[in-house]
Amino acid sequence: MTPIRVLQIFTIMDRGGAETMIMNYYRKLDKTKVQFDFLVHRPEKGAYDDEIETMGGIIYKLPQINPFKPKAYYKALRAFFNSHNNYKIVHSHLNTFSYFPHKIAAEFNIPCRIAHAHIAINKVSLPSIISGKESLKESLKKLVKLQLKKRIKQHATHYFSCGDKAGNWLFGKTPFKTINNAIDTEKFKYNPTISARYKKEYGLENELVIGHIGRFVSQKNHAFLIKIFAALLNKQPHATLVLIGDGPLRAGLQTEAKQLKIDHKIQFLGVRTDIPELCQMMDVFVFPSFYEGLPVTLIEAQAASLKIIASNSITNEVSLTNNIKFLSIEEPAEVWAQHILDLDASKKIDQSSFIINGNYDIISNTKQIELFYLEQNNTTHGTITR
Image: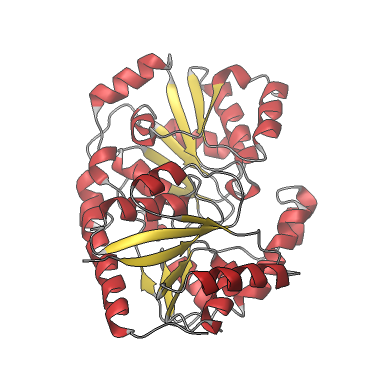
């Protein structure tokens, strides 16, 4: 049996939330039935590229999408579909930018064109720009995305979302299918042996370990996280902040930590492959994002039995256990710090059953999406022509 090949569309296959989610599904797929290929928009190698190719996936690289001058991209994508006319399903994870590949996929009569919502973007706020909480560049990007949102349904045939908030934001009143940001629960299940080993390895045996996983971009609000940690150290000097990820704002945040004279209490660990183990050594997970969809990192953190303080801009759909508390990012850093200190993070109780019962375990969810792809492939037939 020859598997059907589904074209997954991303910017680059680095360790972001949407990318990690689709890799969780990809690992568990029956690849005799369904195989993934990837169309990305950066020339550099992605963190997941080697694993994708090991599992039989093909990675295609196209130029970056310029929303103001899309003709060059359209030309490149037309050339791609002219020479790769075997796809009946394209699954785009570019949020509002899915408009661009779907437009050309529709020209080539590709019958199943999935738009997948992963984030819900807040409105552009003048006070946020003036206060420096959000850069002018970031606000301009938001404005472009808000305009593209109005066009997202012109060429898509199916609508997926990580949750209600992201789906309602991108698709409005149009019905959509929720694809849970499922995880391999067993990998993240609290393990005291691994916790002790990793704490010892990083010299954190007597420390309150505050953790965060995410790209160093303005959306994640690392600058506020640094302020929260500085306020926390004033009351609890035996604490360490562990930051996992990379991105354009990392160097600036390292400089800020030095200026605050707390850099010796922060560990920048970069992009890692041992996320489940690193979660084991954390005590509290802090996540003050400006906006999100339904972050897979918060599902992972709950599976690892961590106490969590998160921004209330994040949908409460993500709350599967009693270990997560939501706060406004308008609250001072000192208030966030006090809430962290008020938590009893000394004891961890296995929370993995809540993840499974909440339908966020990868095994059952993979069967559902696999069935969807197979049904779509079976309901379309014939040669795909322009």
